[in-house]
Image 1 (tube, rainbow, N blue to C red):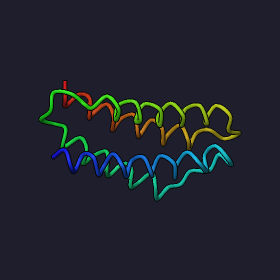
Image 2 (tube, rainbow, N blue to C red):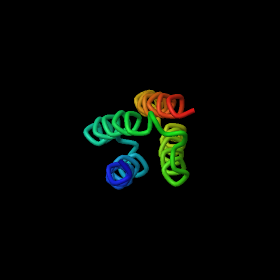
Image 3 (cartoon, rainbow, N blue to C red):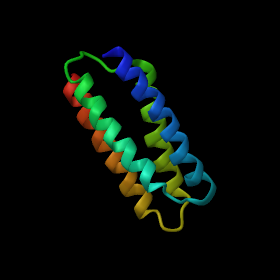
Image 4 (cartoon, one colour):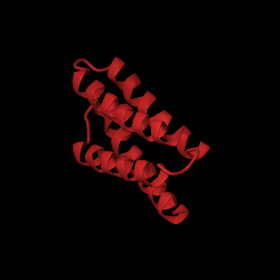
Amino acid sequence: MNSEIHQLENRIDQLSLDILGPLRLSKALNFPALRELEGHLDRLGILLGSANEVPRVLTGKLWILFCSMLAEAEHATEPDEILNAAWAVQEKLRRIYSATS
């Protein structure tokens, strides 16, 4: 299980860059990367569902992604799409952390 979590963490790192890069530069969402991220978060929730806690490093990375999306929405002329995407990520995170507590 740790190996698969580590692989997911590495892919989430890359997807975070794929999502936040265009978001910071042009306030554009990378929808394919977002959909892939959501799938990986679902898988992470399943893998961590039986664990007592989420690894601290992973928690920080996921928190930064969510907060960065919210921050970029504040600077967008039309923030609704970005906010919806951020809240969708937040809901996935809520499910992960609810399952492990």
